[in-house]
Image (cartoon, rainbow, N blue to C red; front, top):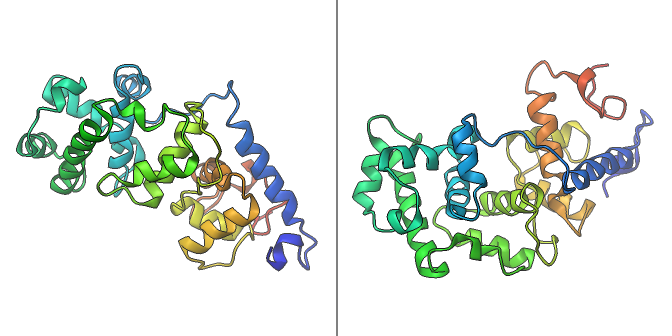
Length: 260
């Protein structure tokens, strides 16, 4: 650990911060935690949670989650369904790339980059059909290792490490999908994580995404992604880029960047 993990001249106990984050992360794995909706649309939320009929909605939403707010990205399958008339896999697997591009573009763009993301959407449908026989739940239903689960998501067009680890984390945390281990699920170093990690003194200011990921692995090797939602939650709710609401944060007394 770096020198600030053990404390500094202010007498701060950084291990206490780490322990609180781990406890919060583990709490989110329990059965009785109520999570915030993934979207702002109730019907879209139902679609994302229907793993029996529409497991591909979850996968396609994960792939859409870039270069726009998460709430809008996760609602794309719902808006696609409204325009196309169905979201059953046996129907959407027949659609052409040209049709997908048209749906993504008119009457208003579904994504900030409609043509690029239409291609990712279309190719994901083809992969689900060809690799998983049209059943996206086969990505996770065989109790895979965390390494295998992350690898399967990374194989989708445009799904880099951030999206793959986010998908694995959400499946384990929110949907309680059973896997053999969690050691290969990394933290998804989004803008919240990149801001909060150094503010908590867990890593130096200006550290790269790779350095943040490596640090999380070092702090909790059995499940580096345990920090994912707890750090995101702090960044989204309280530790804003400007005017952070330190008094509302549960790490107020421990944080080296606290304004109080």
